[in-house]
Structure formats: C-alpha cells, structure tokens
Length: 334
Length: 284
Image 1 (cartoon, rainbow over the protein chains, first blue to last red):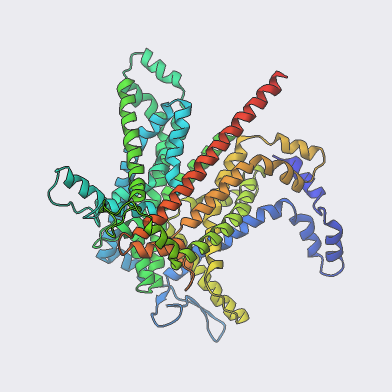
Image 2: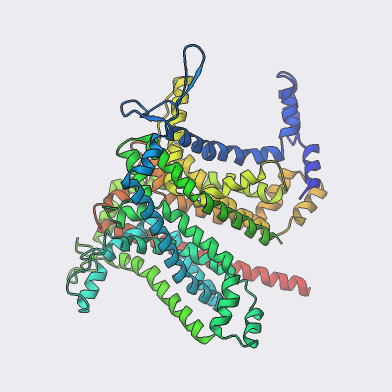
C-alpha cells in the first residue's frame, strides 16, 4: 500500500472538519497555516504522533544521558553536576566535556570486575536457558495440537504473573531454612543446610527461571514451521535420528536460537531485581552499580557513563535482534 | 526418533516442574500459620490469617490502587500510540524516517530497564529545570511521570503485537473501502480496528501487566509519596520472606491464571465458530 490511499488522503486532507479549519485558519494567521492543513493532515499526522512521542521520551533522554556523562560531578549543587554548556557574558558558548567518568569506569577494579561478572552471568544463563528451552520447544512443536495449546498456555502463564513475585518465590525455596534444604534434610541427603541464597548459583537460577519463556517462544515458532518431509528424506537416505537432527533440524532452527538467545542475553546483562534479591552482596552486577552510583552516591555523571557504556556493549546484540525482528515481520507478510 | 522424543519430553516435564514449583510453594505457604514462612506449622494450618492481615495493610492496598490506576492509564496510552505506530509501519509503505521509527519502536523491547529508567529521569529533571526557567513553574514527579515512562516502554510491545497482526492479513479490504469512497479515517475505524481488535485487546492487557509489574523504571521516575505496588513489595521482601506477600502473590497468581484460562477458552470457541461459519459459507 498504497499510492491509492495517498491520493485519497490529499484529496480529503481537509477532512470532515474542513469548514471549521478553513474558517479558523483562513481568516487570521499567515500563509503557513494553509500549507500545514494541506500537507500535514492525514497520514503525516498519523506518522507524526508516535514519532514525536518516541523522539521526546526515548531518543532525547539518551542524548541527555550522553551529555551528563561528560559533565563534572558537583555533589553540592542541584542537580549534582556542573552544566556542560554555558553562555558566557560576552555571548560565547562554553562547552566543558570531561572524560573522567569513562576513565574511571575502565580503571576502577570494582567496575571492571562487575562488567566481567555481568557478561559472564548473562552468557552462562543464556546457555542454560538454551539447553533447557530447546528440548522443551522441540517437544511442544511435536505434540498434538490440543496438547500443544495447553503447553504453550503453561509456558506463557508465568509470564503474565508478577516477575518480582516469581523471583521472590525463590527466596523461600533457596534460603537456609527454605524448602529445598528442608526437603533434602528430611530425605537424609544432606546433614547441613546448603548455602544457596546470595550466591551466583541463585542468580543463575533466577535468570533462567524468569527468562525461559523468552527462549522457548521464538524457538517454538521456528520449530513449528519446519517441514517434516525434510527429516523423512534424511532418514530415508540413511541418517540416524541424531545425525538428521544435527544436519537438518538444528541448522534450520538457527534463527530461533539467535532470537531467543538475544532476548535472554540482552536484558540479563542489565538485570537488577534478580541479583538484588538473590545474588551475592560482595559482587555487584552492572545495573546495581549504576543504581547505587545514582541513588547512594548521587554521582549522576558516573551513573550516566555506566549507562552509555552498557548501551555501547549491547548495541551490536540489539541491532542483530532488530534485523531479525524485521525479517520475521517481512516473512509473516508473505 | 524415539530416543530424541523421550529426551525432549523428559526435559519438557522437568521444565514445567522448574517453572511451577516456586509458584506452587509460594501459594502453599501462604496458608501456613507460622511466621517462619517455610516451616510448616501442621498444628494450626491451614489458616487464612495472612489474607486477613493483607486486607488490613493500608500501605499495600493504597499502593495496589495506585498501581491499577497507573497501569490502566499507561495501557490505554500505549495502545493508542502503539496501534498508530504499528499501522504506520505495516501499512504506510516506505516513507522518510521509517527505519528510524522501526528502530525506535523495537529498541525498548530489549533495552535494560536501568538505562530506560535513568534516561527518563534525567529527561524529567531537565524538563523541570526548563519549565522553572521559562515559566517559573515546578512540577513534581509522581503519577504523571510514571505513566509517561510506562507508556513509552510498553507501547513497543503493543506495536509489535499490532504489526504482526496486520502483517497476517492483506490490505484488500481496506483498499476496497477506499475505492468505495470511504475516508482514510473511516476505513481505519470501520475496517482496520475491528480486524485487529484481538491484537489491540491483548496489547492492552500486555501493557497493563508490564506496567503493573514494573519496578526498576518506576523507582527512577517516581517522586516522594507515590509508591507503586512493586516498590512496596520490593522494600518488604528485601528484609526477607513475608507471609503477607505470599498471600498477595497467591491472589495475583489466581486472578491471572483465571483470566488467561478464560480468555484462551473464549478465543478457542470463537475460532471454532469462525471455522464453522467459513465451512458453511463454503458449502452454501
């Protein structure tokens, strides 16, 4: 679509309210108003509304973060940074950019270790999600239609319930006098309670648990579309089940694997709630670092620098994800 | 084939066990009499006393009411903006800046929440300064700023849902209406909206849930005195498990489960009816 609609749009661009518009705008303000009425109504207005919203509330905020990340921290002023741009008496514009916050990010051991830790946690939890989610998606895609719907419902159901409360549920399971320890002690498997809360293990569990549906759903929607005749052909040609899986199903499901993995990896790097509730207290993840820097130290420039650095780190995965998303939508159109 | 099927089925069973045990244990222990949430007090349980406590807890109740208001407003805003964005992206053909719009609508889907939260807050602080400078008027952060932030990150989800629904059927109906002389706005309300109504409804529910559930972004952009439910829950559970939170969680899980099961049931029935009608139309 649609040259037809466009001509239609311009013919009708005054719309139903045309007498009102012409009355209001012809007798009074200058010529540009007619230009606006002629060229800006209809489609352009429809495009402009979401565009403007995202521009003001999504794009501009990033520019502000970028600006403040170069500002100088001054704890006593409100807001706590020195202005980056300042008009001087003689009409000159003073621009003061400091890279101090970024230098600090790269050199402070606490920061470096939490970057490495975040990436490590995100990477391994993505891997675990994949190892658990792939067989699940596979089994669902092979089930009969009735079961398939029930299974999908069961996968989506936790997604609709509170994320915070589902993470909270793990505290009850993992803590020293929690359910898992009680059960294991009752069964006589352990004598001493295991320390599971506030460990990396708990963070992995929390992330895999919360993000598993994000892995399964793209994988499922890929696996479901597979053509079974290919598998049959492979088996007719003498491939065993493992070989035909490795040579046919797995390569075909690659887009699903990429999409699911990115949907887990990207938010996991910036995860805040799970490590705060379940994680180690001696090893922070980046998101916690950012929020502590912001709320506790009130060092806005440094918090902004952390955000920009996180964005730079994630920009490649995010772009891959977007390209993938567009391709999916294009494919759905055909 | 068989071993493979067995393996994946075992994993499926294990996965469901993993997904549901925490929720079920949370529900189970909400009926526990003991304050030590996870130690079952067999003598005096089950009990409903934590539910009674929950309904006496004014901090939780007022936070829940605030969350409902914010979620309803942001879901409505997100549906309006997200539907427009989805329509523009899938129906308006190529136009200048289309790629940018597509990028702007999908980016919030994967953006880490701390970044969204921080950037929104810094925007609001800058706007505060600007307004103070220009008009000498100071606005407070609170319900309005939370709602704006929630609209911004939830509209991305609505856009994706609407866009994929619109991609699912071609535009011949809309074109026919245009050919018959209907104005674009009329075509939109009479043809497009009814067709994508399921997507709009599920987009609204999705946006409502995401807003109702959000902690991180809200923590950044909320002002003093405007505590949403997740903020209250978070401050409670940081100090350890609390039986009142278990009771609250149980109620929330049951409401959601009921809603999801009912909507799935109705959707299936509608689908069946449509299929029957199609068959009858084909036969007649």
